[in-house]
Length: 275
Image (cartoon, rainbow, N blue to C red):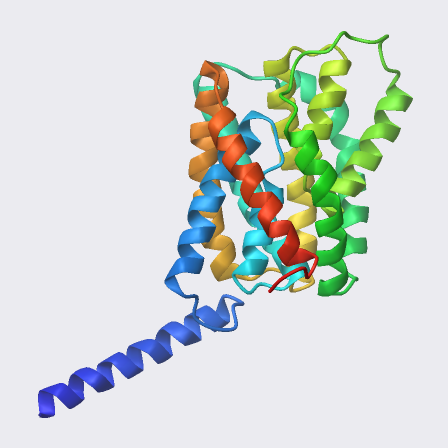
């Protein structure tokens, strides 16, 4: 009898400790098991797609909302995963001998400035407003995701002024919303004449620069829920590593189809159609 009481007391104390540490990580309560599984595997799938083209945030942000993270907190929490997964993606490309560091340099300054502006602006709106904006934007991004990236016929060389202005606005959007920015970057970079593989690596480097700027803003504003963000980050990072290898070898169709179907279903959650 005494042993049973001691075991129960131990379980109670353990739960209190776990709740305390989770609260310190910025999450208001314990996550149920299915939320953690959704975030991990959803992050894994999104990480693969992000490494090959983009649009993974159309899955990860709604999944965070589904797991009980309010809209703007989901936006901030998602940035931790993007930051780490982009790092693992670049490392994976690098180890395979595929790099594009010099090609990325001209685009970094304007996206960093834009990202700072966008992240500060978006952190001021309400969670419900963000969820509505994100849900509306998901529809065109999903359709854009249906198009497989390919090298376009290069246009005349863009001037430095045009590049700065275009990437400043891309940075503002990426800092505020993030979703679909990889697809936009690929479209612009391939149009500028970069081979698809080089354009894809530049896209990852530019997105990393955006996230390095935006993430501290969300952290300072208290818009990151660390526990779900960490679980999502693990999935995104593993997916990013796998995705970089798939991108080099070719092939992403099945994962992209499943991700798009899931994203379409989650759009209704953000727009308040159900739930």
